[in-house]
Image 1 (cartoon, helix red, strand yellow):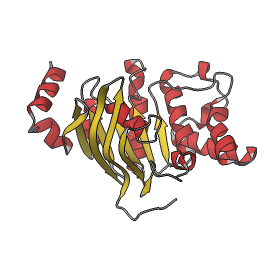
Image 2 (image 1 turned 180 degrees about the vertical axis):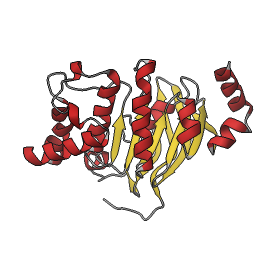
Image 3 (image 1 turned 90 degrees about the vertical axis):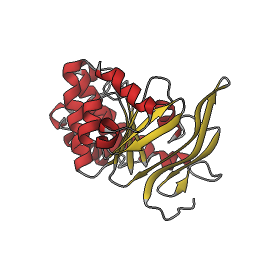
Length: 249
């Protein structure tokens, strides 16, 4: 597994993906620097979630390259399972095991994937839960937690593997509006602590306030990218202006 020296934690180069003859990603180029919080916005069907899923090969790209810390995930001989540990993923649905406590859900990957002894895994899982403000809920089962708390457990599960970058795919879309704030607060704290993050979300206020860079996608391509002030204040592309105008209605 060859690692190249690079300033980027994550790079997508010429990424292509089609489903049933429909091209969903049309040669996308995107790079994320260490400690950067990048927000990807755009209409439904623009390829945002597919881009995220291709970045850790949950979806197999049809063309192009994905590099994490300089390692090409598409290269022959790359240990994809080892590389996936460098890329934490948080989904719309929490995907927690209902028969396991919060601590059990977070420690499972540490034991099964990393091979940590049970006691060490428990200690590291508790530290991850504490990082998202849920150490007091370690013994609670998912049914005893709110949707926002379940999503924060899912974030802790990804954090426990100590990834280089965290990918968030619409992490608040399944939550009641009053529960969104706690998850966004947790994400903001992660960003402040130096976690590199690539986020797909419709939470525009959060993007405006917290992102280092905003990327607007449409039709399987990146239309424009820039600072939140530039994208939300003075976008140069007509398609971006139209999209943001619809949201403002």
